[in-house]
Image 1 (spheres, protein in one colour):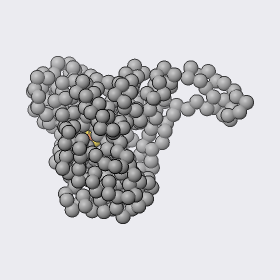
Image 2 (cartoon, protein in one colour):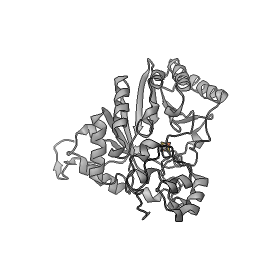
Image 3 (cartoon, helix red, strand yellow):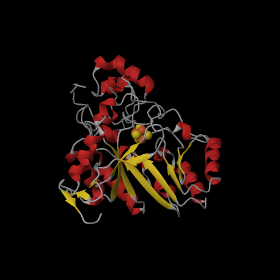
Image 4 (cartoon, protein in one colour):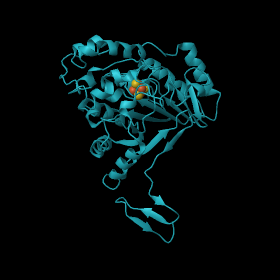
Length: 349
Ligand code: SF4
């Protein structure tokens, strides 16, 4: 988008509609018709915390949340359920891909809607909340599958639940003897840190091993409010993992990735995964080829602490699972390259 109007960030409300986007200076009026069509397919939400971070609609924050007419272009490589959730769902709200763990998706609401989201055809403000009976059914599925040791609360975003409902789910999971680990995947600490209240953190209390994976793609998302929120969670004893997606125009340089991963370490968050973009419909503008991603990570090796070097992963389209993408350093049976790329032939490898 060549539009370069400085957004009027003084508004403090959640932006949801095409009219609000145009009024806030985030999209030109000439795109009204195309954006209205985009809105028929995909939800939009830009919360005040993110709106405050946008300097230009095409900057690394704006690109992630402002809809574009390009989203109407679906390429041959793209599909509506890129990682195959639907085929792996035994009951509503559960996805069972790996033997020892399962996803529990109690809602499909998010604090914002990423324009590159892999579940973009399903997430939104109006849908996907499991009612009491459906939630009980999903919890019963977990209760009756003793091989499930880890439950991953995702959605949507589980921190969009009320403390009461989240507490109910945490209590139910904590009472399952075979569940050792509860992991929450969320964007709330950066997108709506004000939601992480004492009551919400009380709801996360459990004797189980509780982890939180926070989705952050650019260092600017690590605002003072986000940092304060993450530190509150750390003080509650919750280990933090950073999850990012490699995105064209957002974090596709060594400098951007280094700053992002270092900012995570600074709040005691371990960069966990750098995801290759999933081929969801209308997301081609964000695609970075794997060879480029490998080069970026290789460029960081040796330059940043190993703590700040996540695993670069691909969720193989179709639901075949997640695999690391390298870069690799071993070549043949006895040759290894050092971080500068120089090969070393060893007597034993
Ligand atoms: S927060 Fe996650 S689930 Fe929600 S829109 Fe972004 S990528 Fe999708």
